[in-house]
Image (cartoon, rainbow over all chains, first blue to last red; front, top):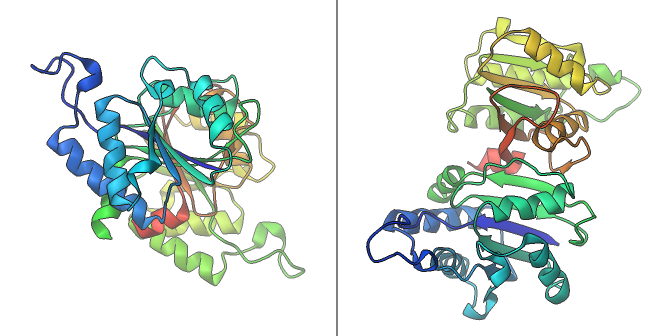
Length: 171
Length: 164
């Protein structure tokens, strides 16, 4: 299985007027534009997903919808999961994938830090915490025979948003 | 400190004519590595020092990078600690003994590089990483120690470095 871990793009600031509810903060125009270019970069790398699992928070869903559109996917291929919300638990996310989606070859998850780093750590290092610099709009590719967290996934690559944007603009 | 780790590019297959230490890059390896080296400029990369395994395939990889980034030959230094059976803790000691280097590139072999990255980002040398031939990883840290001290900033495959 290929698992792509994607951090939401740049959203409006937490204290911006009208957006007091953290779960409702949308992407900024800049965040949106960058995410479109990042998606183009992923396309240039021939990345594709059978399913996108997203945090239900607006900034994550906005990010996931840009991916759905840019990669020519169907709306039904986007599913939200509370396990990806800031209060969610990465080990339960792994359980959810194992329970429901083990038959899929390629899944993207869109969520928040530090949960995503914790998820990657569980999958590639078991109990050890991996220090990762996954930026907003950054993407990490893991591969594994399965996602049991005592097994070891391979960290195939981790790309910064600016590198994906450069790829997207070139292609 | 920024520590960049690169695996040597594709070398000729082992055969009776070449000692393992003397295997050069293949024609394809040399061509691809040349492209990757030129693309490092687009990533705004520059190195104060390149430490390389003395094995020919690593040395040639390091020289291609130095050439593309206009790094003087005296800043490309061979280290026996980077040979395939070298000890990652001794390499860390060597780097620290050299005094301050802000942007250091090391060019070496697998699984040595993955073991070193795993130790520095997770305190665990057994991490599985996709360090392919010509791949490049960037770590950042306040102070280099042999243990969990670094953030994995990015890890790019040769295909990505070629395409960018």
